[in-house]
Length: 188
Ligand SMILES: [Fe+2]
Image 1 (cartoon, rainbow, N blue to C red):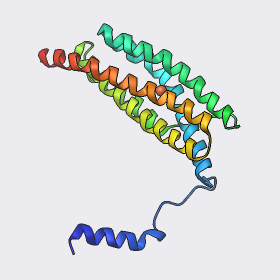
Image 2: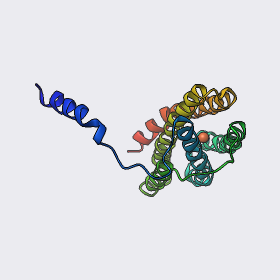
Image 3: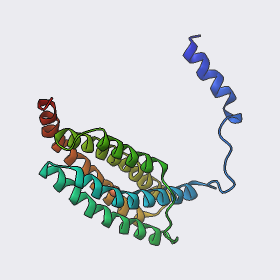
Image 4: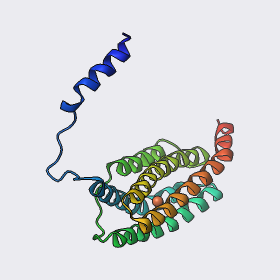
């Protein structure tokens, strides 16, 4: 047996005894997990509202500034939409710290500090912005799928609307990157 296969088979055999110790307030089922994830994205969106102005201030390309400014406005609407989802499923809107978004925002700041104001920093801001968008796409995709399974059709359609907005923001950034990355390369 190959080493990898051997290791997989050993892990499968020992799987029931493995895993981290669950917290006392651990999710009881998919609905609990869904609510937990919703609180996570609620925190993430609110954190993004605070972080985006700094990214806008540091961007120089007019198209990039416009794309980020538009996304800031959309993000504010998304926060309200998450609040609507909480209402739809009958629970109080509550934010739970999202470690991933905190890290992504920190990384955006690091990228800005490690580049000079100009086209190279613009390219870095796009990179950081797209990482954020991909995290959000993954989160809303999961939430939407869970909502459907839980029979929360209204929540699913609200979440799907935001999912599409995040995908749109991501492709806009890809489009801006196609020119900015070339300019950044030419600058040396
Ligand atoms: Fe968002």
